[in-house]
Length: 273
Length: 294
Image (cartoon, rainbow over all chains, first blue to last red):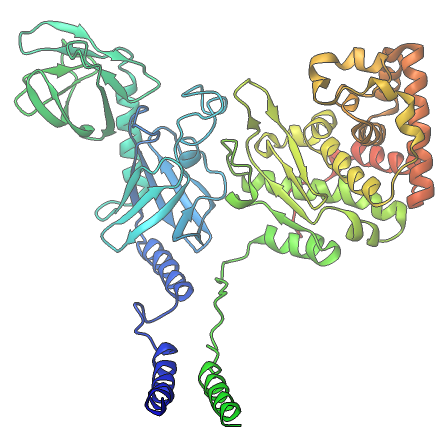
């Protein structure tokens, strides 16, 4: 009996000491709020340190069903951003912020047609998409990574990934103008036609309000979603057309049979005009 | 005795080991960023927050918005116009009639939230304004406010100021209730959520409601009567009474008497003086600078 009691008296202090150990190894040096604050500060400095500006490839919607657009941004202070986009003329300056949510979130929180056009209701965007939801684009993005080379964003509503790339060689205004001119050139093509390798021509299923088309020869009905660049059409992912897998079609200058120019693969197996 | 000693020793051990002290981290977990303030921020701070303890959220904040709708932020220019108009048409008339800023400071909603687009529903209709718990008013469609619409009194009332006065009146009657005799005037005519199916503007007037929405319930009827009376010109008000016919007019007149007496007795506000002040300001809109923030 005495031995039992002695064991108890020895064991209890040992158990108490070890059961209440308060010092545990920390996974992170700083608490979550400090780390989030640092991530926000980093996002602000990366956005603003690039004095030339950024290019965003935007594919609004849940399945890129409205096509792709190019948006240019220049963050001129920690509250103001200048934005241009290829569907619209001019540059507009508006408010933005990087706010604290479950992670750092880049929000374009003041209206700017060049970015909010993609998220506006169809009633306000010229009738693209449903009256109440429009193209379902985003104007708030979770900042996944931010460095001088690229900023990876994730749309808060659509969950689509958007990559911002720094403009290096050309200034913000001139590069935005080049993209807008290319979009204007493309918009002259009210009807899209495909000239196949057999020389036969067929109309593509295409609505000029959107930047997608369907190849009637493709029975799957796949939507080919593209973006307009100054040198051609960039597809959102590789597609097969006329037996050729392409992710880019080069623009060729107007010719007698192609008064508005045409887009083709490297081997000119097919032409779109 | 021995057992008591053991128990005391055991208790002491628990107390010693369970209550060790830990130093507080001197860094707060709540950290504010240092964001550049613009002229509108300073104006809001000066004219709304300092004087009336009111916050104006003109930049889009998802947590303050209605997630059921696809919404766009307000433009900076429309936010400036609305903030200045709100002060001129929505706040200052009360200051002048009550003789101090305390009335608005005490009762006006504390948070005004601006949204650029209307809140479109999938049936083609849209929402222009909402209020929550007497503390917050959300105004939609601010991006329709520009140099032209900013001087269009009918537009301003139907898109913004009717809602503002309507919601403010809810706060007032929830603070001091109006006489129950108001409810009796068209007691069986209230139709709840079916108001838009049952009444149009003319049939509502004929039943004694100043608008179809007023037929929803007595509280809505009370604030609609108030809001229409102080924002409509005498000609527009009288036209509504003519459209109402004799039966409808008599009911609306009876309701207006109660509203008028209530504001006099409960708040010492002469409704006709307030109306005159608002209408005079509406008439001077063309001279009012909506963009200067000095």
